[in-house]
Image (cartoon, rainbow, N blue to C red; front, side):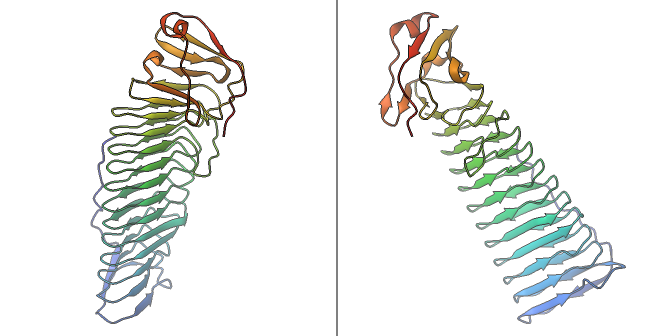
Amino acid sequence: MNRAEPVMPTYFATDATTRWGDHDPNRMDFRAFTDHGLAILAGAGNDTLIGTQGDDHLEGHSGNDQLISASGNDQLVGGEGNDEVRVNGSGDNWLLGVQGDDYLYARGSTGDNMFIGGDGHDKMFGGTGLDQFFGGAGNDWVSGSSARDRAWGGADSDTLNGNNGDDSLYGEDGNDTLFGGNGADTVHGGDGNDDVRGFQSNGVEDGVGDFLVGGDGRDVLRGGGNDTMHGGSGSDVFDARFGNGTTVLSDANVHDSLVLTSLGLDNSEITMVGHDLVISSKSLTIENGANVGHIYLAPGVEWVPPPPLVFAAEATTINGDWAFA
């Protein structure tokens, strides 16, 4: 899916606008205001802004600011500096970092939130709603919500964690690391040499089918269940060691490598079905499998199939313990 970064709407459900000067530090807490929202525009200092119970627009401008949503559908804009932006409650919020190394946090939110990191090395944490994340320039880190997320890494080398839910993750530019997590995820590395994984960042997989795409570059795709892995252009590595169920590898070519270490291949049967390579014990199917450049059964141990495997639909049985670490 192509990136289409949203534009925050201009609206103020307010009866008053408060402007601050450049005093340092500034702290203003409007949680006692329940009737109306406010637009609070800070100055050049290191400010702390806490919104009302209504729909607020909080803007930090320059300085290392802390913006906190109390309730309502809020817009929080960090501005320049290394800012901390936090939202709570059930509202649908916008969290913008703009510039600097920002911390955008919505773990206590049940709404559908929009995160835009901007420039800098940003960290973004979703809540329990349908959240969307947009990284920018810099090495960004995203931890998705417990629901269905969509995340785009942007430029540079990003880390995206889908966590729970049926997520869609796109690394875009840079050498990215992506974890689908639990659920039926779509994980696309994009440009660069990416590490694309269908399971959680702690290595736990749920056996639900993911769709993993490497994109351009020399990518590593690691299956974690009933997954489909598509390498794309470049010399890719398909790592099926985490497989648990039916794993399908598509677009394999002579420049790609297949890693089967720790898969438990004792007495497995390997067959050719048409142009596909099938390993029956783990239901691993490789489309156009005869074109795979290298198959590794252990680190540095390459398996060279006998001629019947390549030229006929005959079975080859692997004997021995191939459960290498």
